[in-house]
Amino acid sequence: MVDPTSDLGEDVTAEEAPNCAACGDPIVNEVTHRVVTWIEDDSVRTAHFCEEACRREWNP
Ligand SMILES: [Zn+2]
Image (tube, rainbow, N blue to C red; front, top):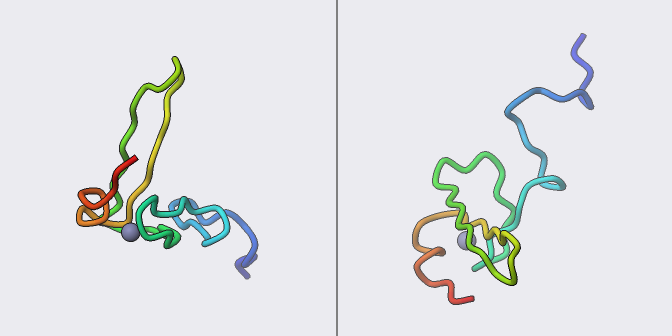
């Protein structure tokens, strides 16, 4: 039996998935997942997007 609560490796649940910075959707194993990082106030900021279109629309 497989424990349904065990970590299955690459699978990410909606609860622990990042949310798209543009549309707010949880990004769960999206192949179109985009990550943007930048430096702000001497720290690294990260924004996740569910697809390229959201990244283009986004303005910090
Ligand atoms: Zn999005």
